[in-house]
Image 1 (cartoon, rainbow, N blue to C red):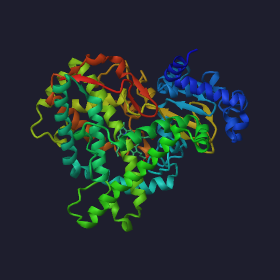
Image 2: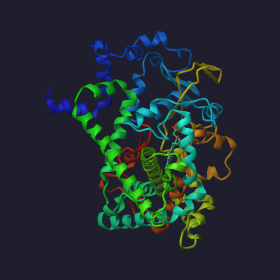
Image 3: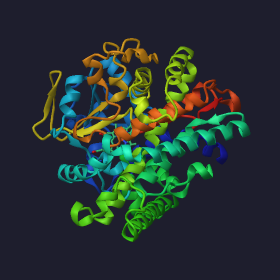
Image 4: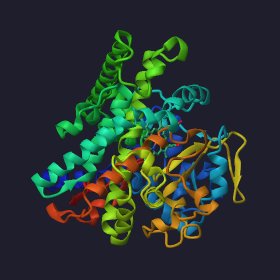
Length: 507
Ligand code: HEM
């Protein structure tokens, strides 16, 4: 085979090649793997003898190895694969020798209950890749409770009111920049602009200074570095062996990731320092942020480094999630004429200037948002939790302690017994939701680890949707530049994004 052909196969089928390579390494050269535990857990065949989940429903292969699940995970199709398993095997399904996925309301309530016994697994430490310890990644309940207590008040619904003008300014600028792109290009890439908007907003609310991406129309280095770390984190979650390789071999790929990690730490330290200086110079002139009060470190007990790491958590958790949700909302409202007309009619009655207060009570806007969060949850994948040492029984199946139990919103939100005709985008189903619908909804997670940015996300979703459709009532999905439905297929690792990384709309 000629080398360009080999290269193109490697590029196109890299997840398969990676899984294959790891299996090959394991099979041929186990001596290079120092960690006996790793070999035990992942060598094909051995797991079958030890798998404590052999008695659960699931594909035979999942008793032996996680390779098939890993393959779908790396292909960004794990939620779809697991959903198909639920359709075949029922609400409790084994996806790997030590990993079960659960699609059952009672179990979800137990697993995600406030101060419950099911803690986050190590998955989260690996996912954020790099030396970061914050409210999102921590698996330590004491650290989590302390930080959550401090961070929760400034980002509560009532505290956010004073930050609304900054948010509304950024939304207004986004709409103006979109109009310019329509004139220059003949279409708007709403995914790009929503992402610039949400990143600039959370940057400004965290660091007191926006990233300026809406103005420049480009991603800055900070966001590039975050993206490269997130994609590496997603791979490290599946292949812990790579962490070992990264530590010993000076491969360029790992070197650039390490540099990105260092740069991120440096930039966020700079941003936080600048803001801290502003406060100490003249507190009344510093723009209020989600961290302003916490800079009184003696009172809050938070260190400079704590604030830096928490700000980084906000940037990661608060940009793509809201941008992806807005992108799917824009797209599906444009695709459904009746939905769009009903929404436009409701929005037409809102007096100028449009404020979040005037949007909160709009029933149809709220239904459209709920339906988008149901079908296009930005986190459709399983939220992995550690089964407590005493084990747990769900639907008559005992799951021993120390294993992973995950709940994925992708399946919970598509249960036809709770959401009839589940694949249909039908906001009216939220007119008077049943208790079961509410219980099965997990777009923001649940219990003690429920999304901290839920109120901020909702403000952004309401304002951006209202201003977009009031300004561009004729918005429709574009077919320019080859844009098609396949661009909007979901590609999900932990977070989800449209496969084509764009969404072109004409206005
Ligand atoms: C539509 C937008 C959003 C969605 C769908 C979303 C979804 C989620 C989900 C599902 C979790 C739980 C993860 C788990 O249990 O494994 C979570 C946690 C979190 N989210 Fe969001 N999120 C959104 C917006 C935001 C925003 C704007 C922020 C800004 C600060 C944010 C900050 C966080 C934080 C800090 C956590 C960790 C909370 C904890 O562990 O105590 N999110 N989010």
